[in-house]
Length: 201
Image (cartoon, rainbow, N blue to C red; front, top):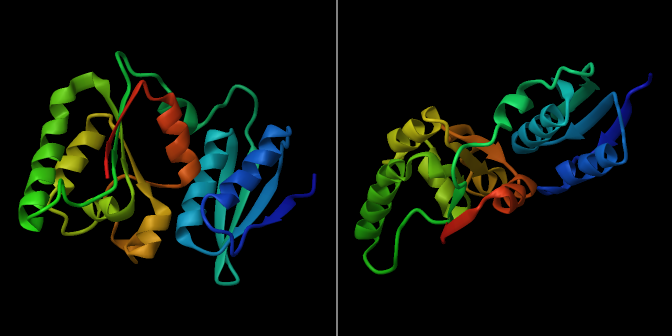
């Protein structure tokens, strides 16, 4: 079967994923080849295809990336199945859109946010997902004072989603050290699935 090609170069997040989702929702079984022009889109598209049951291969092409997705055999749900397991108890999502907590003194604000993140582990099994966007993505990059705390959370099973558009804006995509680079569709979907959303913006 010939591969269906989708040119998503030049499209801002989350439009590449939305275009693919539309095809998948219509019953597209692939193979699909998706062209994107930046690393964040490459990660977002690859992850969406994997979670939709496709085997994914990525190749550099014309200064961007060609992502080929081939539908996996029935019964093989791939890595997405492992990530989709529900956690026990209430699913709480923490949305962090800043690298400071509160207004006023910036040094104090940074210290308060570091203390907040270090204390999140006390939520136990209820803490399901942490989303970083806008200036909050700076918390997940090299040199961040909360990097170890975030790594400890992910190692305990907490999902950490880091906005790819925001990383690109701050030119920090290559500096990210923890979490999954994600898109607005993923963020909205996780907010919808959460039992409780706590927002720090």
